[in-house]
Image (cartoon, rainbow, N blue to C red):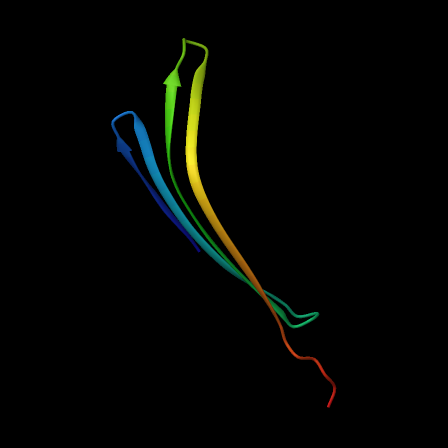
Length: 74
């Protein structure tokens, strides 16, 4: 799942994005959960007819967790 959006504010574009994923591996009964979010602002300055300067500042937070099931023989 990913969701995001942006908003044009004067010469800047304000943006945000959130994503999450869940993976399961049958070989070792492992489950991996991952999520992140990003917020920031960007701007494009046209220097001349052949060059544009892109500037972006953002904050990114990522988290990943792995759960391994207990596979002891009974």
